[in-house]
Image 1: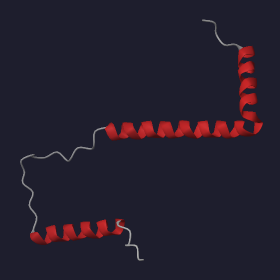
Image 2: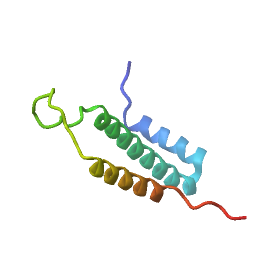
Image 3: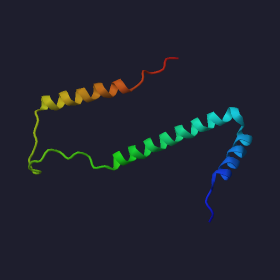
Image 4: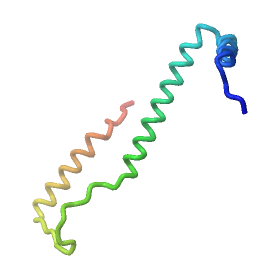
Length: 93
């Protein structure tokens, strides 16, 4: 298969210029660049998600963790406060 040389690239560039016009060509190049960046960002995020999460500190896996009722109530109350911040206010109408 023959390789693409400079004359072929010039012909391709002229055809693209005729198809898209000189005003739309920069917009097309910009959108291709943004799409490429988004694709690379998505691939890197997917790789980060597949990476193993940090392991908990080493210790006895059979060790039982206990907490008082007051500590549990405080933790649940804090979780509810944080969850209520995420909920939008009800629509009035």
